[in-house]
Image 1 (cartoon, rainbow, N blue to C red):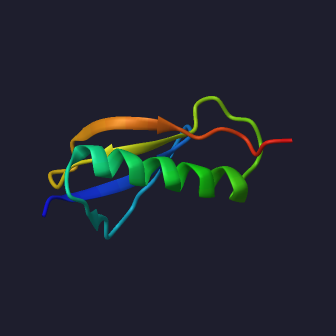
Image 2 (cartoon, one colour; image 1 turned 45 degrees about the horizontal axis):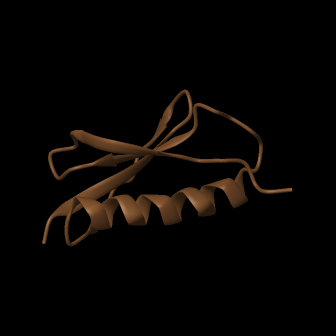
Length: 72
Protein backbone atom coordinates (compact mmCIF):
# COMPACT_ATOMS: atom_id res chain seq x y z
CA UNK A 1 0.00 0.00 0.00
CA UNK A 2 1.46 3.43 -0.95
CA UNK A 3 2.71 5.73 1.79
CA UNK A 4 1.81 9.44 1.92
CA UNK A 5 2.72 12.43 4.06
CA UNK A 6 0.40 15.32 4.92
CA UNK A 7 2.29 18.52 5.67
CA UNK A 8 0.55 21.75 6.65
CA UNK A 9 1.64 24.80 4.65
CA UNK A 10 0.77 28.36 5.69
CA UNK A 11 3.80 30.46 4.92
CA UNK A 12 5.98 27.87 6.63
CA UNK A 13 5.66 24.09 6.63
CA UNK A 14 4.62 21.85 9.53
CA UNK A 15 6.08 18.49 8.55
CA UNK A 16 4.22 15.20 9.01
CA UNK A 17 7.06 12.98 10.30
CA UNK A 18 5.33 9.58 10.03
CA UNK A 19 2.74 9.76 7.25
CA UNK A 20 0.03 7.20 6.52
CA UNK A 21 -0.63 4.34 4.17
CA UNK A 22 -3.50 4.98 1.74
CA UNK A 23 -4.95 2.79 -0.97
CA UNK A 24 -4.17 5.30 -3.76
CA UNK A 25 -3.87 9.01 -4.57
CA UNK A 26 -7.64 9.50 -4.34
CA UNK A 27 -7.74 8.01 -0.84
CA UNK A 28 -4.82 10.24 0.16
CA UNK A 29 -6.68 13.32 -1.10
CA UNK A 30 -9.76 12.30 0.89
CA UNK A 31 -7.62 11.93 4.01
CA UNK A 32 -6.16 15.40 3.36
CA UNK A 33 -9.69 16.84 3.16
CA UNK A 34 -10.52 15.34 6.56
CA UNK A 35 -7.26 16.68 8.01
CA UNK A 36 -8.08 20.12 6.58
CA UNK A 37 -11.34 20.16 8.56
CA UNK A 38 -9.46 19.35 11.77
CA UNK A 39 -6.88 22.06 11.09
CA UNK A 40 -9.62 24.62 10.41
CA UNK A 41 -11.22 23.83 13.77
CA UNK A 42 -7.88 23.99 15.58
CA UNK A 43 -6.80 27.30 14.02
CA UNK A 44 -9.97 29.07 12.84
CA UNK A 45 -8.37 32.32 11.63
CA UNK A 46 -8.80 33.01 7.93
CA UNK A 47 -5.58 32.37 6.02
CA UNK A 48 -6.05 31.82 2.27
CA UNK A 49 -2.50 30.40 1.95
CA UNK A 50 -3.06 27.56 4.44
CA UNK A 51 -3.10 24.14 2.76
CA UNK A 52 -2.56 20.46 3.41
CA UNK A 53 0.22 19.34 1.09
CA UNK A 54 -0.16 15.69 -0.01
CA UNK A 55 3.25 14.13 -0.59
CA UNK A 56 4.12 10.71 -1.98
CA UNK A 57 6.60 8.33 -0.31
CA UNK A 58 9.51 10.23 -1.91
CA UNK A 59 8.09 13.48 -0.44
CA UNK A 60 7.12 14.87 -3.85
CA UNK A 61 3.98 16.99 -3.67
CA UNK A 62 1.16 15.41 -5.65
CA UNK A 63 -1.63 17.78 -4.61
CA UNK A 64 -2.80 20.32 -2.05
CA UNK A 65 -6.10 20.76 -0.24
CA UNK A 66 -7.15 24.19 1.04
CA UNK A 67 -7.87 24.71 4.73
CA UNK A 68 -10.81 27.03 5.21
CA UNK A 69 -11.62 28.97 8.35
CA UNK A 70 -14.10 27.59 10.85
CA UNK A 71 -17.69 28.23 9.69
CA UNK A 72 -19.55 30.98 11.54
